[in-house]
Length: 336
Image (cartoon, rainbow, N blue to C red; front, side, top):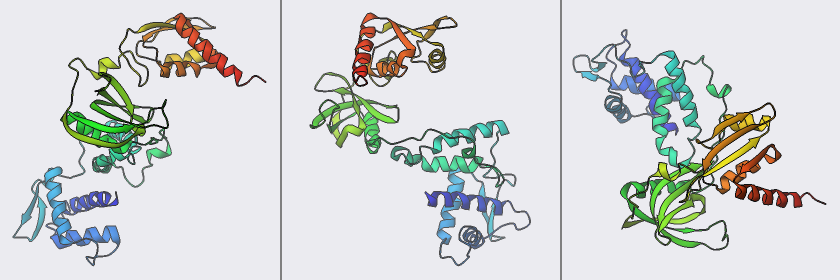
């Protein structure tokens, strides 16, 4: 978004000229010329016209509360409050550092289609808290996990509109179980949830008369319908996922799960809990015992399998049996 960045640079140039006590009351042409020279190395008017500067002055007044006034007597612009600066941020250095860190986090989502609409806001924050030319970018010291798009993100704005307007949506959907066949679905969208860089729609399924979850990357031909959504009176997104690990949730009672973990795995589990209900109930030099109360979902089972032989489920027996069967199936691939 170079045009956005150029606008922010122009604002700073205009701000600097309006605060210049040695050359007060710069004219519109002086502002235009200075901006073009700084951005393009010329003053011809080929890149920035007077109307652009007029829009910049208006935006600075409306969005940044800049007290810009025009002096007929002096033929130029000035700040009614001589102490004002568009770059003033009444924060401490520690607070600014925290904001810079947060901005670095936001910038990783810049190319995700749904978040591109917030590009201007991100650029404004970056510009306001930018440090001098001698500063080093945080990217030299910090690297975030890339926000890889799995597809379907282009549907986020439409789905969000449907949720906010309480309208039904229609789409074709291909499930994991039926790869070769897409089926039409009409649902009432309730909630959007991101899990491991994939987006999901939680909705009231009109066919099943129940809550259903759909992966956006398996949708096609999405349409927002002019039909009122049917919203279950007792639906609450926080409550719905309260006992869930991952994206799968369903009606039912949470189950008490007890896990025995070897020392290295235990340290990981203690610092990266499976669920908010997790508790460390026993810690010994050679093992630790954890308890949690959740719905047993496929995501949770796969998380456990990731620890291979370093964890053992003590209860419930049904989960022990499931893991035993998965382990036996895995072993078959390595027996020769």
